[in-house]
Image 1 (cartoon, helix red, strand yellow):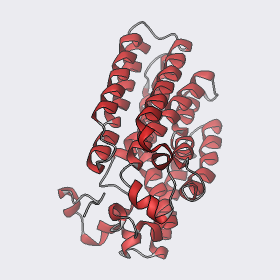
Image 2 (tube, helix red, strand yellow):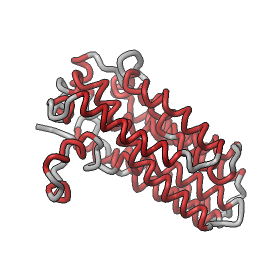
Image 3 (cartoon, helix red, strand yellow):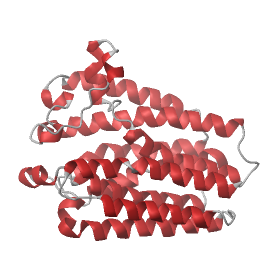
Length: 301
């Protein structure tokens, strides 16, 4: 069976009664945490480069955002699985997830969700007013996102809008205000999500078509590589504009060329009809996110 649950050794060292909660929160697969956290890191570091540079405050913000990314990604997974528990049971890759398989009840998942949201709220109220407002604005998007696959072929677009608020919040946490650079980073991250989540969705396209779930993978079909290439190109343009407005140095140019090369490599490596290939190329975006962070660090200071 092709499944997205990974039986990692460290999980086996945790008391068995917690295993299902670990899988429900996707702690066995940190890729989602990285993809949520990295746009916030880009924004925090780029904003700090406009001021005095990296300070204790910036380091503290990175730590808070890292913890928040783990907690809120877990909360989003619980909400997603609550919405999708009946659909997940019909898809090979997701049929063994804790809610779909019955390992965790709905009431247990709701209690767990309450704990996660409480931790996230405690972190959020440590931020300034602008950041708190932005954080609160994400809640409706987090709740409605799992429903989007039932009504539109563009749930990946809604995910992009939801998943990348960290790019706005990171800037606000440093500056206590917004700027065009922050919005350009947000737009870049949204296009990035459209690309990598279309790749991810190709894992389930056959099951999704059978059960009536919509996705950009089904919408684009055999043209998916062209669309993903377009999304990645739009991301590069948005990043370049954000860098230009931030007066980064000329090292940003070879850095962006490396980012473009990584995108080119992804498209070349990706076999749309192989779930293993789709998952591997999707996961490579963590490295891409770190590459962008490195470009910001090198060219911004």
